[in-house]
Structure formats: C-alpha cells, structure tokens
Image (cartoon, rainbow, N blue to C red; front, side):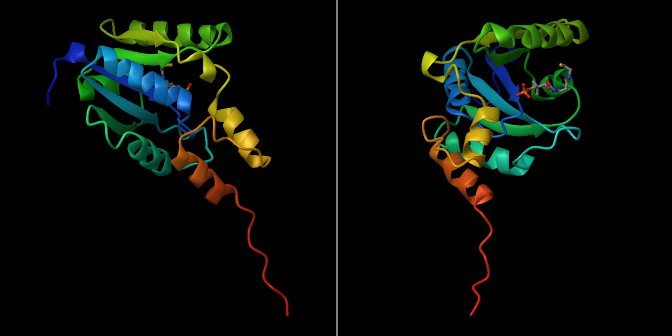
Length: 172
Ligand code: PNS
C-alpha cells in the first residue's frame, strides 16, 4: 500500500546513535500492527553524537533494506510537526525498564498536549535486549569490547572504523 491512511502509518522516532538490535526488534514489532513505519532520526543541534545524522540514516537503511514498508528519514524541529508532514498519528517508542517510564510519559503527554490527535504506543523489545542501549554500546565499543550481540553487523563494522586508533606513521 503506497499511501496508507493516517491510522495505518506510524513513526518510530529517536536518536539512533547508533541503531541497536533492540531498536530493530521494536521496528519489526511495529510492522505487525501498522502498514508503514517511518524510522525518524532526530537532528538535535544541542546533542552531538558519535555518528552524523547521515551516517545513522545510512546504517538504518542498510538494516531495513529488504523491508519496503519501513522508510528512514531525519527530521528537525518538533516531532508532531514531522508527523503531520508524513501523515501519521501514532508514535512508537520502546520501553525497556521502569526507569524509562518517566521520560517517556513526559514526552507522550507533551506531544499529545501539542497535538491532540497524536497517540504514543509503547512496545517492549525481546527480553534479551532489555539491557541494550546506544549509550552502553558506544561505551563498550570505545573501550574495546564486543558489541556483536547488541547491534546489527553494519553497526559493528562502522563502530570499528570510527573508533579504530589512528595509524602511526612508520619510522625508518
Ligand atoms: O532516542 P531518544 O534520544 O530518546 O529520542 C528522543 C526523541 C527524538 C523522541 C525526542 O527528543 C523528540 O521527539 N525530539 C523532537 C523535538 C520535540 O518534538 N520535542 C517535544 C516533545 S518531547
């Protein structure tokens, strides 16, 4: 379906710096309910990440390259404005633990206050990912640990390239 009605399209927003297997799991769960899902990478000028927005979008596109019902975009400004542009009224967010709840609750209510029509749906990723976060992934990878069980292969590769120590010039 190329142009599903608003109720069949959802937006999965986030920083995705970088995308983890927990995020991938949530996106696929979202597809069980919605016809189309837009993974929306936020451009936040106040929060510099490890990966550029373009790098994040590229990695997510690679992960979902065989899933035509998933689109990947970046956005700046308010999420509710972006939702209006893409024609969606459902936001999907993943919940890992109770500790996520307060922040998520605040965002959901704020978005609904700005746009009465917008609803946030929370989904739980597979338990095996409940400890996975982009922040932990970056820390582990920076300290030389393996993140193979936490992120898709393309992210393992890109992390390796980004964090590789600079080659020393060979002295003769
Ligand atoms: O992965 P994150 O960093 O927890 O995602 C946070 C995100 C992108 C969902 C949130 O920061 C957001 O929606 N930003 C866009 C600006 C906005 O609409 N702010 C008001 C609602 S909180």
